[in-house]
Amino acid sequence: MQFLITAYDGTDSEAQARRNAARPAHIDGAKSLLAGGHVLIGGAIMNDDNEMIGSSLVVEFESRNELDQWLQNDPYVTCNVWQDITVQAFRTAVRA
Image 1 (cartoon, helix red, strand yellow):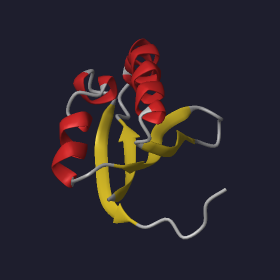
Image 2 (cartoon, rainbow, N blue to C red; image 1 turned 90 degrees about the vertical axis):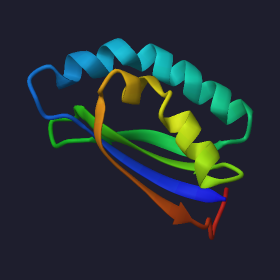
Image 3 (cartoon, helix red, strand yellow; image 1 turned 30 degrees about the vertical axis):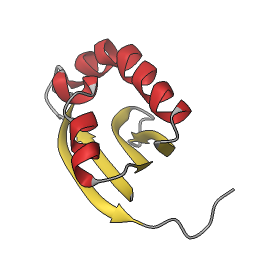
């Protein structure tokens, strides 16, 4: 099953510091997911000042439960970076 994840960071004064601190571990995990075929595309959501304020990913897992298990252990979740997360079923129509 494919899923679209849209996750916005907190907006408090420490939000960017939390993101920067958790980013290396998050990227390492994303590379592992990519190698395993779970991440189809992912990247940062940017504001008008070119600052990262969230993330969006299209992922593929066997089930929503499997996705949730990964998500609850992602550094952006465990380090309280992502504070507004939506997950929706998704179906890719066009692929590169």
